[in-house]
Length: 76
Image (spheres, rainbow, N blue to C red):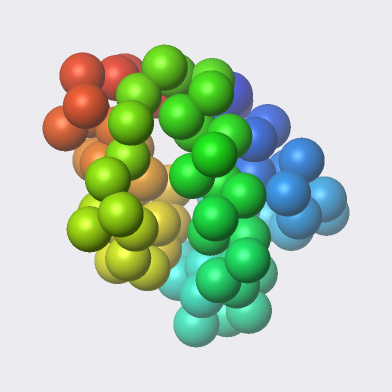
């Protein structure tokens, strides 16, 4: 979990990701950040996230990201 928060903090320093339930609705992340996040997750965890999976619902909060990574066999 700390790796995931560190990745998010690299993208948007100073945000409280563990306390935010919807990164996009709260303005914590935007569509450009989503692209950056996907690239960082793919590099860090050696996974491929398909374009069809690149929807805000899969990246809305820490639990959603962890669920997506779990589908790819990663425990974050």
